[in-house]
Amino acid sequence: MPKTKKLAFMALLTAMALTIFVIEAQIPAPVPIPGVKLGLANIITLTAMVLLGRKEAGVVLFLRIIMGAMFAGNPSTIIYSAAGGLLAYFAMCLLVGIIPENRLWLISAISAVCHNAGQLLACALVVQTPGVFVYAPALAASGIITGLFTGFAAMYLIKALRKMRN
Amino acid sequence: MIVVASFRAEGKFANFRKMKTKHILILLVAAVLLCAGGFWLIKNADTGSVAVIKVDGQVRDKIDLSKVEESYEISIDTEYGHNTILVEPGAISVIDADCPDHVCVKQGKLTGGGLSIICMPHRLVIQIGGSDIDA
Image 1 (cartoon, chains in turn blue, orange):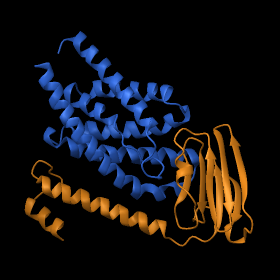
Image 2: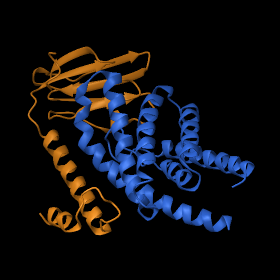
Image 3: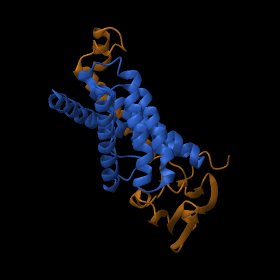
């Protein structure tokens, strides 16, 4: 892909991720468990990772987290989304070379669990209460379920984007 | 047992390429069920009746819920934000907060068990009993 086109595509993906992130923040939490959310913005991170590469996906993710905290309210939550996002990103980088692309849903599920783990770890450090780990099983389960969902969504998006480009 | 047997038949545990989709899905469902079981166990754990309110890791208040006779409200105002806590006989809950998601309010009443009410943006934790109180 030419450099300019790639830059434009990255900007487009960042805008999409940010839009999804802001809209998702308006959706009330489906279950009253702190930290549980759909994680729809992860669809874009996965898509960027498959279509562009690790480095580019990292840039898109970094920009989304920084700008997401600016647009979607509370700046103190940036610690949680950054810790979760970083851990999920590393998991994704590692797995994308091991697991074939037709099983992107598995990469997504594992990275979603890692996101929740990172978020919970950050929360435990911030509030200095190991007691928050009581939510670890609930967050692991929700990570698997939402991760599978976003993984399938990313697979459809990648398929559509590839078709569009050709 | 079925899962274990299927892994033996497939050979290497960590080789995702050789694993069948069905087996991965069974593994994921098993993991979800296991986690749900763990959550249920924690939720129903016997932890006593003393509620501890913490902000930023510092204990703000300790209330024995079994000795509360009349309901009252506590206001927690910190640099992170505002929460209103309702203390009732045998129960504690957050009834108002100025955070964006209101997860702490939706968590409802805490009457016992191992779970806690957590307001992540405001660094507020309310838990009943628990091993890390006296430490």
